[in-house]
Image (cartoon, rainbow, N blue to C red; front, top):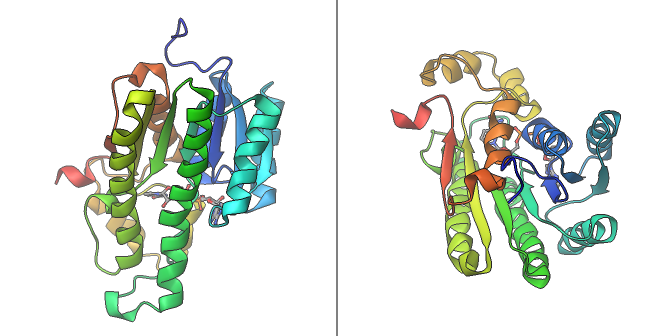
Length: 258
Ligand SMILES: NC(=O)c1ccc[n+]([C@@H]2O[C@H](COP(=O)([O-])OP(=O)(O)OC[C@H]3O[C@@H](n4cnc5c(N)ncnc54)[C@H](O)[C@@H]3O)[C@@H](O)[C@H]2O)c1
């Protein structure tokens, strides 16, 4: 344990979806707390911006363009972490997608259904598969945080594919937490509420009145900001959260308490 149990000096953190929103803030926070950061994203522009911001602040980071739905790209992502920084100690799997419009269950196209499940569920599993294999090989434990959602705990009409994917991520997280506890690998998930990121801005631009609905649904009376979600995720990865394993943590201003 380091002297300050919230720091990551000498450790490497990998963040998927690190080019935007919650993943970007998590990448910046890891760097502020001493980690070397591997920023992975489908979109090079965003990922490189995150890396430049870390370097401007005196931190160490690399960008690896990765589509989390492609097994060979995910394997290359972890290999890049090993080649540049010697391994992976912490991972936040934040890459995710949604539909801009609410769609009833029977009205989803098969293509859209598969696209969302592929990124949000299979993508998380593929990343865990490579991250965990590396952590086991290095025999020094590790921590993983997956991005579920309040829709991994409750549902909203018109969100079948997203809600199914996020409930599945919760189940996957709990299972992996049991599979690797004896090897010192902790696996937890975050369940963010309505958080102002590009993903949610796209939903709002499609249907502006939904913003009021988000705020009304939230007991704290406002949407979250990416930093508030990232704080919880980075903390879950730290030694300060050493006894948390298999937790699906709402960070939602009280939405699921209702
Ligand atoms: N914003 C919210 O209100 C909210 C609430 C609950 C859960 N979440 C979850 O948090 C995570 C981050 O969301 P965000 O709001 O920061 O969104 P965002 O759109 O700002 O960031 C998501 C990032 O993932 C990347 N990405 C998408 N598909 C990818 C792929 N196939 N491979 C690699 N990268 C890919 C995008 O390029 C983007 O940079 C998602 O899993 C999302 O479902 C967000």
